[in-house]
Length: 299
Ligand code: C5P
Image (cartoon, rainbow, N blue to C red; front, top):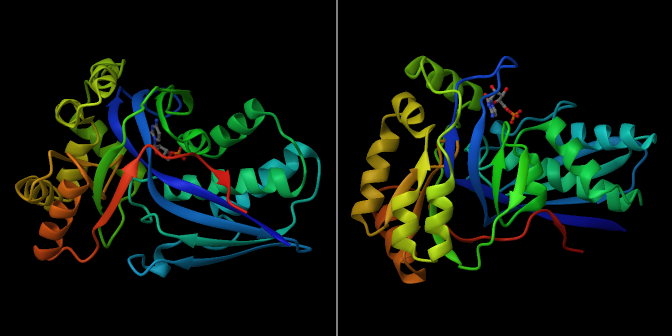
């Protein structure tokens, strides 16, 4: 007997970043979209807590944090503590989401662990409590629970769903070596010591999204962490230019990077861009559509 929960990668269609708050976090106005690159987490009964991770070919197994600090085990312990019970279970995670790639792979696993434990332990935790626990674990974990397309404010943890009936085509190119999210935020601070307190508004992006037109959305994509990410990894700028030359409407660093995502006009456009990027020597090129569901039980 076991339960399997699927959780999706996220990209930020808009990521407005304001000046760091007193607590060190940056105020955000962001629009998340869950896209069809997934991790699957299976939980089965056991006396203690354990975790085994299997990774897709494009992921370096050594890059996956293991040990008791892994976000899956932290999520299980936090929910158990909230429910006043012991944390027990054997977790197995199959990872397809790039690690330390700016696509919320760890956050997806944490959201999947919360959903799996809640069901396996028959806790029936309220949505509000699950979202609050998710926010304690990380800023974008509430979004990994909700999925779809959603606006995030605060430090990104306060999410509200956004109407997004279209289906958008994306090509994602992960990097071999991840980037540290805190390091990218620190570099943003260094480049923009006078950043305004209020982050750039997501309203123009939301207006473009509502048209359902890929070209309008492409023009509105915005990421304030792209400049620091490219400054730390100049090759990301070349990759964006290359994908756009291969037919993508627009390339963008995903979150804090280093994964680069390309918005394409159609399935054919995505295939063409992916083939072009593979031909240019990029070994790992993923194609996905969004929005897709948040963390949900598969079986
Ligand atoms: O919340 P999470 O654990 O995902 O954040 C990781 C790190 O990213 C934080 O410790 C902080 O350095 C940075 N961060 C930030 N502002 C945010 C979200 C994250 O500075 N809104």
